[in-house]
Image (cartoon, rainbow, N blue to C red; front, side):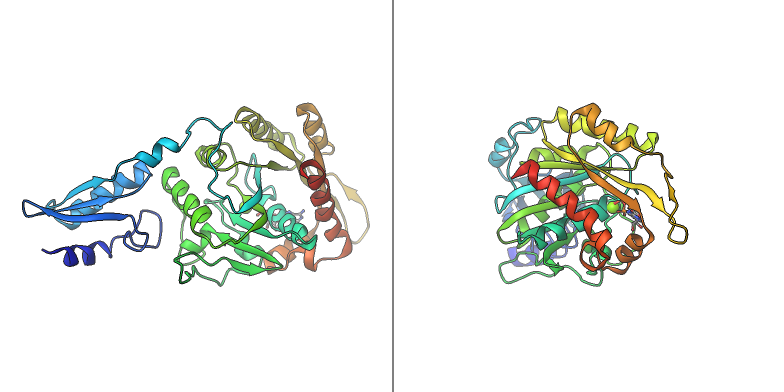
Length: 341
Ligand SMILES: Nc1ncnc2c1ncn2[C@@H]1O[C@H](COP(=O)(O)OP(=O)(O)O)[C@@H](O)[C@H]1O
Ligand SMILES: [Mg+2]
């Protein structure tokens, strides 16, 4: 077997969790033959992905291959565990906003999408990265769900564009919207880092990241790999949501991520027929929690059927809604800007 044959075989091997081959991604550093056996050297950072690939290659070559990993010099530069000195995988972005929540379903993606569009409406250059590997809903909310991953001549991923912002989603790496997303956290992390490094974002005033909910590995790694300017935490007002959000606040504080503020979503409901206000999830919980932890309160958004309808239709309320719906998100953007500009 010669080098060309080996390369051809390698070109059919996909990087774990990504829809791209290891030769496309240029992680094959060297191919050689030693004592009649192919020796392939891979240049990659992620330990778990490396182990997975090694297994796959051993299977593919029926054990008749030696896999090596290129000198890990670069790895020494990574300050794992030191979020006070994070790496910067997104030097093209002046500021990074991480939107997170204690729980799923509280409106984190809706806030991420509309906050991003509100910032663009003010004239900022905004990129939105949908990093919620468990529920990548951003493409639907911004009307780009029909798009697929595209690469330009510089081998960079081309982000979607709509409503004045650039959009990239982990959802685009799967063939259909109902493909289950079962990620090992280390594979998810390497996919996200690839999106930070390999997407043609251009210069950005803001990179907004729709993070997965909770306080896991992915949040920690993102805080290590990016200098986050501000975390924005979304919650609903009922005690069980506030319990979880308190943990998210404590985690941000522990890992030294500045908190830009708390958004209370689904705060109340005004019945459209009678005008009666119902505090479905209780009232005032978000503001009280913000006060308790000494973080800014960015605003309330009521439960409003038109917000849900606009979000499902891919027409974000801050751009296509009525004045009242636009107002909720614009207020949040204004208050956040006051914290960070
Ligand atoms: N203020 C609101 N009023 C009505 N529906 C909302 C509101 N905020 C979010 N939704 C809807 O609730 C659902 C969950 O919101 P989403 O942003 O996807 O939450 P998360 O990202 O936290 O899981 C979506 O269907 C969304 O359209
Ligand atoms: Mg979401």
